[in-house]
Length: 270
Image (cartoon, rainbow, N blue to C red; front, side, top):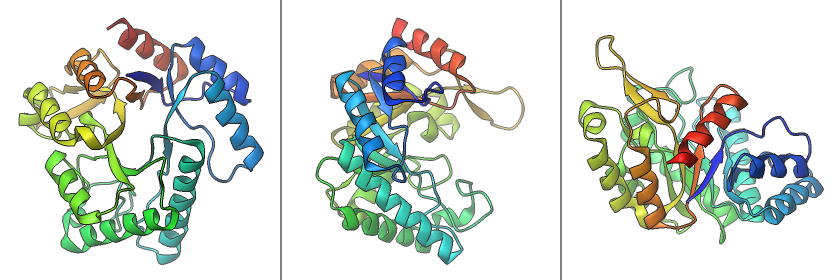
């Protein structure tokens, strides 16, 4: 597998960015600029990544394509289309977003309406629209799983693949995001196997972090830095490597570059 981190280390140029990634031991990256950059800058970063042997794991969207406000929704869908086109241009493994929601103030929040038939239909139609506008051949559009938003597990993801019916739709695997109940937490190895066995052929890219059970009531899970929780990270990476030798795995959700460096060192030591 190819390990990376969700930071550009504050670098100001493409060459500096690529050099710092390699210096820290990264072999995969999240593309650090978006579709609003000019073509020349995109080419600079693409060239720097290529010359440094860095796999471009993902191009992120991270906007609410189901926003309740129609104008905002349309703007975000257009942005997602442009980000997918960028992912196609740079040969990223995937373009990734979360499903989004029209049901509350937080764009990635948990609401009962997230699981309604109407919202699921909107998700399917929106993903189809994004993919059909670009018709990608080198990349895939994906939805990162969430604890409280479609898809919440491997069977839900398989169902979504069948509903969307597009070759350009793939899987972005975030195992920790789907550990949302006691069964999946206490039997994480078995859940890991289920996810990889069922989704393996469609997995384009992965996120990596750890998870731990808090002592406070009721059942409270917290994502955390690699090595500070209970997830069998080495087993996870072994399974992903067996699935695809160059599978990109991106460490995310740390507070600063020093934390990313420490986490990289820990995971590489495994």
